[in-house]
Length: 325
Image (tube, rainbow, N blue to C red; front, side, top):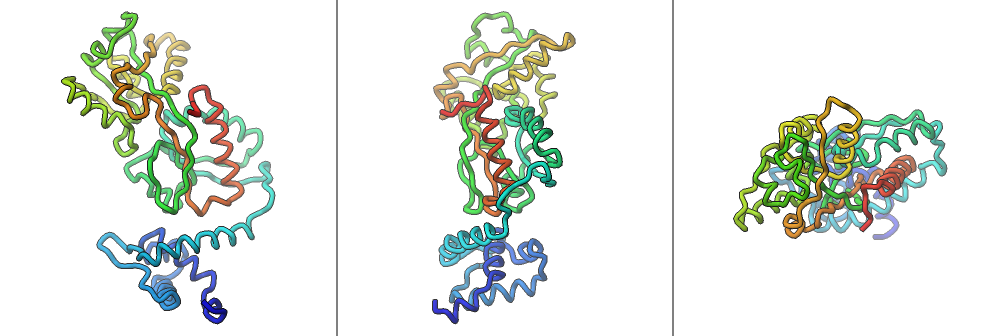
């Protein structure tokens, strides 16, 4: 491309390109950029003329990038990031930082770091606000749409517009109360446990937890395994435990429940049991499930965003429930 052609390619066209690519729709991209749809369509037409390619093909579910568009994305994203660095502040004054950060994370993973994080924010960044919500069926859409700053859970793959980092590995455990028939058994076996009702906490299918694949493997071996209750409500899970069900959850939630039970005489006594070896043998993670933190490419060089995600990673890795290997 010669100099005269480069002059045709202004920054607004590059921003239009990456926004259409991420949103998969001209109308959604126009809304994101606060433009009219016809104006953005004209920008897209200019891009097509400059790069001599259709760039996006209309499908039933939205616009699909062409092979050329995917090649261009690899070149354009670094340019956008470099431009963002030009306008970002070189230093961050936490005492004056007035910003709301939005997180999506389930309760079991949140317990790993929420208390030290709130204490840290109160002392170092008192004007920072947090919005924390559990995952729902929308999955990565809030991250891709820029409505959520950080997501935390186990995830195998992310689109090119979403960055991710492995934080560590989280143990799982089983909780039973004195209402469970095996409460006073010193070492209950797997065969003992599966004869009774089971509840899982935050074991949603879309999260990719391996318990979804363990059940059919156990059935192939002749075991009739059923999850009688799945819930993202800790209160509902604890009520189920009180009624004699065995709860499968993260170690952090297990320790939290143990502390709650020990500090309140109205709660029923509980025990924490390790995951039986028979299940660990079928579990691809051997009872230690990877936890990732991920964010949109837009936020990668944002100084305040980087500060928060690095602080959360630090606090999670310092947790007694998080393992690095």
